Amino acid sequence: MSLERLEKWATVRHFRLAIALFEYGSILHAARSLHLSQPTASKLLQDLEEAVEAQLYTRNRRGVTPTELGRDFVQRSRMILAQLDHVSQAIDALGKGHAGRVAIGSVLTGSSYLVPAAIARLQASRPSIRIKIVEGVSAELVPRLISGELDFLIGRLSDVSSSVVVTQEALFSENAIIVARRDHALAQQPGVKLEELARQAWILPPIETTLRKQFDSVFHQKGIEPPHATIETASFFNILWLLKQTDLLGILPQSIISDPAHSNELVRLPAFEPLILEQIGVSRLRDATLSPAASALLDALREVMHRAHKRENTS
Image (cartoon, rainbow, N blue to C red; front, side, top):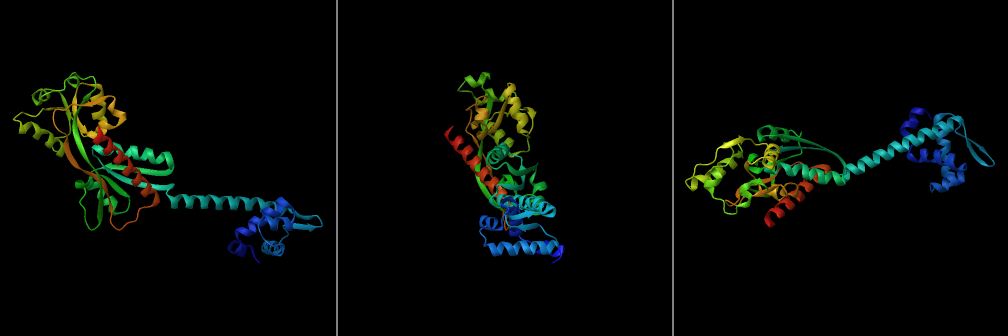
């Protein structure tokens, strides 16, 4: 039997036997440790030695003793079994969603901050999952979803048209409220009028956005000129920082203010009822099956958004 044939023929049992013979120094005891009969163990050892065309163990009355080649074979057998164990663990982790890669597209919305919250939740229980987040507008992200580069998109469902290719799942509907830092002068006045709000300095979303149009219409309906934006941006990082550090007023998704990370510093000004924004959810390929890792991240998003919606309804 040639060494080339050994590579195609050798099984885990052969490598385990070589190690057991080294550890026990006896064919009988090695066979028992592997739940084999002594004749079977003897035949496996004979096959190995025929394959390498050399003696791996010398037989004597006291048992078996490894040759120099036998000791080297045992060392390499341990390496092979260790690698097989690593592969087995990796495959098991991938199958159970404890490892793997996930790539998602995030269409920027007020709920975008919930994505890192879901990832933090997932990483606490499945730290081996590797996640890539691609932010952008739907026109850029949908082609990458269809090509398979992204597992799914998270954002406003209206930004991504449902079709024969894309299916959608609504997670919750976002509301928007007027927000100020807790020490703002108006935060201590429960009956603030729209006229007073119109005279304040504001940080607002761009004028072409749906949220800005809804905000302005509240003032128009009362015959009041909407406030001008001192700062205009769609960056929630900038909005949150400036609202906490200045006397600017802003309009933010209610779920952000319900989040303990921000509720100690920001408060709602109840000047008008929350604006009902569009549904936030997941868009993914209709006929594609998510990997276990991607499914685990989607489950984390569902849970985080469910909790955010629950806080919003009880606040």
